[in-house]
Image (tube, rainbow, N blue to C red; front, side, top):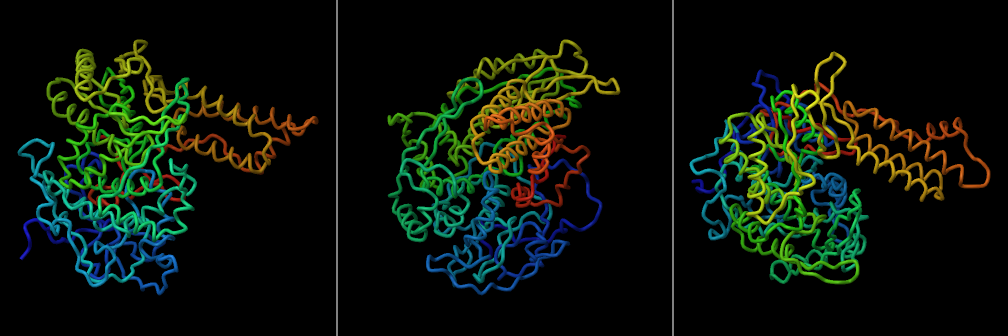
Length: 629
């Protein structure tokens, strides 16, 4: 007899690679209905542990059709430090392999089963915690009467994990308990999760440790990745012991200031290594819960989504959506003005684990160590730069902006409207001017209720429509300038190019960098220059922006020619020899990375795990996971 709070048994569904006619549905706006799974149930035995969410030819663990196969158990002995063998779930080799993809904001790595690695214990389902009191009353921010509707084959529970034999995992695997949490969050949208604190165990924290950047700056205690790794197992068990005894204390956050490009400085908070480690574990739990709640208008700091997805959605909305006016808005000092009382109330709507909420509160209330040695204790905000700050910011703005716009603003309007938000930067498109102006006024009142304020210099309403002609304005969003211009066929089209201030500031930074590093060894200098230019083309290489990228490249080459010839009293390079040097070190020229007519994957063939784990790999940027309708 099944318990009432257990997840339903899995049902079979078509594999992602099978053929068949299926309706094409927009992936981004299909999140409110459950996506059918891409891995059939019958292809995995119970003793196989967590099933792979996405086939990977490199892992040799599944066929092209999506059918899984059991792999032989690797016979490796643990090292003296307690590390698992190569290829084992939770081992250093597997976790470090996946560490490069963690900064995209999602728990996409391979993990153990939900037995916490203890042999001989039965699997524990998320829906049936050991302490019944750990699950609070159902409460949600969704409208009353709204119930989730799962499609056929969608209610798949976690795999049984009676045996703990090692199973080779791939980069696209996701921890079993996180998949169970995500399933529960979707099927029961009014459920408050309890007993989450127990997942801060040595196995999970070990994987999180190997996802940390090895060259990241240290916190106030000065402990680096290499220092903590020397006695990793002892440090992890000591950390878990303090977490269990509630003796864990968040350390001060070291503040660092970096230039913003407009003459101002941006404050960043650098937590200690142990705080980063625990924050990664808590962040992946919050992402598993709230990814099912977030609306499709939010693009920032979400797994599988990025700035290019927001820019593409905004471009298609402006070009084909029939909007004539745009309200560009920005929140002034957003990360420093988040009110803790509101944020804790928002978290408690989905989380009923008091220990986890108190742990998050410790990070919010941790003091800040300034560069001059002064310690301050702010009453609002979360350190910008902390690992958990992005997901907390999304949770805050989900209630403050997204739900308010969807449930209160849009129903009162006669014309079409749509919001595109990336973190605290957002653009709202309207069909009528009076509705855009009314929204701008209501926005100030709405933000003031939650302790926020709009940036006056970055908030404006302007005409931006197909028939606007010379009356159309221009605005910046995520480093790009949007404007209307006639194409080669004489038709009005939305164009994008690098924002003027960003473009000029970028060229000045490149000139300064070449001048300051001209003394370095030539091979080292050109290797760094190659990486800088490649990153610039990967972000700004959108259709219509080639001219400004070309000017940027030509200015870089001229500056390089100038300062390389001043390394000595004799002229070292003419233009011919400099061009040969550039070709030798393969300095990349400007290129367009955006592709037109890209076919989006069918949402019925993609599971939640696949959407979460479709992140950046070692060979380049993964395909976008969503597109505006």
